[in-house]
Image (cartoon, rainbow over all chains, first blue to last red; front, side, top):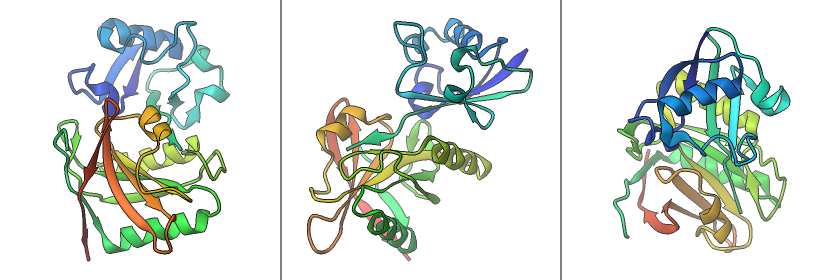
Length: 91
Length: 144
């Protein structure tokens, strides 16, 4: 089930500049694993040491923030769009 | 300046809307996102659209762009063939210069970080890039 993953400019240095990648997976976590297999430089950028979504990363499945769904266990379907964005914050 | 920076180019109307939104946010910090074209992975500096966002922290000391406003801004930028290229926020009592927190949390070395300061009677508007903890000022060019 290909899912489209849209990457922020920050992470495109790890994907040879590619902004959008189609990968397979039944959950967000599986999609991320496939993404890291394809682009190993993304390892550690999306998921922290404990295996949870990185604190400074926002992930939206279509228009829903996956923190309010099932996080990395959120199910995805063919044609879904996962958008990854850095949290934008400061002081 | 320790690395090449583009010139931030925005319209006088965009400039006024950013400053006005920062005034409206007082006493809290205000924030919003800039969209425009890229050259490779680097913004050209041209601002095509601005997106005022809510400060999810509702704080005079920190800001976090509301995640739903972040998505709304991204989707609109994508629809128009643009990219998010930077963020503005206000400093209510300190200079228009990135704080230590700003440097630590700067999400993207390619982005342009705009600061609007209300430390003095007239607002001060400055732009920077932040890369590997190094701050470089970005020239600002206003067009009508």
